[in-house]
Image (cartoon, rainbow, N blue to C red):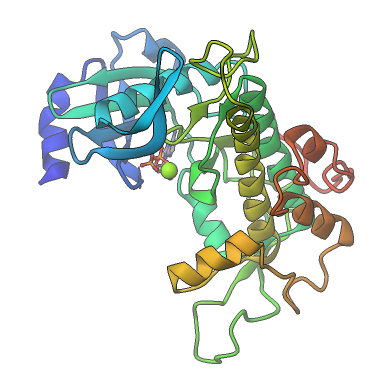
Length: 341
Ligand code: ADP
Ligand code: MG
């Protein structure tokens, strides 16, 4: 099976040894790895994370038109290879100089696999697990949201849109400072037998925190414009206004993502949910969410206002990254959390 293949193939992976699986995504498995002593990476990193993508599992359908010499052509199929190389190129470009983005280290490929070598974060899957089980204090939420905002600011200023902001793609570097956990006050479901909604509350006090939060996974990222010229990529000035607008709007996709993560951290469940995908889609397109009682009762108006500025259906009215970073709630002094840097 695949797992065995990866280990039998590791002989082809130069300079690193795969140790154990630490995470999984839709198209990849992520392993903890050790750089071999002889490699230059070993000087800087004791351990690394290695994202392994199997070749030719599928062809990613790219719905966006392809550009050739500034002209847009109909929908095209992008091969996994092009997709992976794009992810690597973008990750490599954006990761230096931002402490809230997972650092890119190296890329390798063998006949059957691609390997994206990155800085290892101990709290890999854990953030996602926490968010599934519990909700966070406003201070802890703010501490995380600021760092996510910082990562997005870095990306957007380089003309890059992440497009896949969700708890699974947020990693953090230390969990030894996790503060005490308290039982949740309310159940999300009225069914007394349901265990699914039993949550815990992480207040984030007593010097506790989550350390540094980093954004990972550039698999769906896209470069909208070149930083130096601010002109849309691959065009020569004949771009139609609606295309330029689309490209500007697409940055707002990330802001919506931040809004969903923020909402979820504060109350412990996502803003939009339905078992039926078509109903869910309908709810999202109308921006149909509520600050559900009693879970939101004790959450401040400032936090609610910030969430609602992000979950604004009209991209023009939705916060951009600078407006978010200047939000009054986000800038309240969080005395409870000692920022560990
Ligand atoms: P995919 O593109 O398949 O979603 P990701 O890059 O999101 O792959 O990685 C999948 C999972 O692996 C993540 O959700 C996370 O739990 C874990 N992971 C990814 N990168 C790292 C890393 N640098 N350190 C620790 N865990 C990671
Ligand atoms: Mg992912």
